[in-house]
Amino acid sequence: MKIGVIGGSGLYEMDGLRNIQPRAIATPFGPPSDEYMGGELGGHEVFFLPRHGRGHRLLPSEINHRANIFGFKTLGVERIISISAVGSLREELRPRDIVLPDQYFDRTKKSAEHTFFGQGIVAHAPFGEPACPDLRRQAAAACRQAILRQKQDGEIRVHTGGTYVNMEGPAFSTKAESLFYRKMGFDVIGMTSLGEAKLCREAGICYQLLAMVTDFDCWHESEQPVTVEIILANLTANSSLAKEVVRELVGQLSARPQCGCAGAMSNAVFTAPAAMPAERRKMLAPLLGKYVGDA
Image (tube, rainbow, N blue to C red):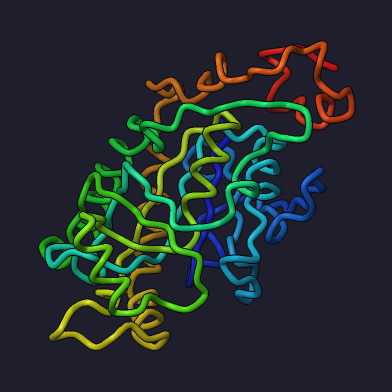
């Protein structure tokens, strides 16, 4: 089984990988954020990609999610574990807690960049349940085991489920926006995960975000407004735990996913194969091949 790991702010490398081989992947959607670092972990082949590039070179709005996910698909990855810093919109979701979102709300203007389709091929991905329930269940168990191993039980809590609202950035929320998101019932806020989730669904890849809470955004009256310094301090504290969670999760993943993510697009393509532009159909063969055949 091949597993992908996307590292967010503060996580630019994956400890524990053996026999590391960097892989530079060219995609029809342009270059991914960086090279994929392939290696062995927990008996599986793992490919790690830093979302913002090594050295944190890319703004959230500059990340080429299509290239990143297409690259994972080209490598044969079946499951992706994503790690990202988020702001909390709930009192009970404290800094350094881990949230495993099961829903998303889109506040971006990038719908064209969050799909592989268009330009002659129409598909409508089912997205009512945007994250993989099987991967989320196993991730929750791995988080709790990693917290116990680091003797941080009670200090850091795991919250299974919740809604991630995806804003564009790069500026953080205004207080008015933050209060609005709270009233809407959202749980955490970030700038990057929605595009990954949508594209993984189209690619037939299981996806789950490990949302690492770094701050209370700017709604909390008794807490400091979010700053880069606050985020970096909590990211540094959380980075070793995030790596431990990934090692734990990869080691315990079952060989066969107990979900329907791999076949999610089986009835999603509307365009008749004969009507598809040949070049476009060939370009999307890694996604479409098992449904409409090769061009």
